[in-house]
Amino acid sequence: MGSTNKQVNNEMLWRQRIKDHAGSGQSVAAYCRDHSLVVATFHWWKARLRKSAGALVVRKAPTEVPFIDLGSVNPGVAGNTLPVVGACVDIRLDLGLGMVLTITRR
Image (cartoon, helix red, strand yellow):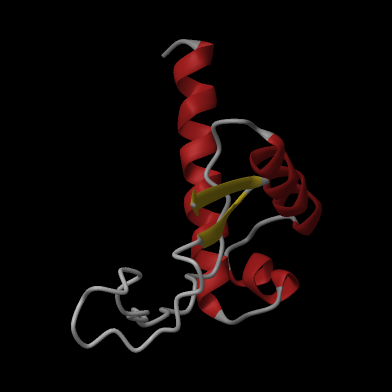
């Protein structure tokens, strides 16, 4: 097995271990003790995978936000419950990671 394959396998193994730890509810020390891992090595891999551009960082799943119907922005549509001032609309969506989508209708 080449060194590149071994590195990829190690990364996959440690991603899985970090994911398993996140879902275990245990402290890092307890998880490492139960799985015969060295705590410092666990932290080293977690930091390495976090910094790595293509690495999947384990995060808790975001809480699901229900869809919010804001109604129509067209004042000519029956049942429109939103006040429309001069038919101008500004919508700003923060997409995360510094990306913002802004939609403006004048």
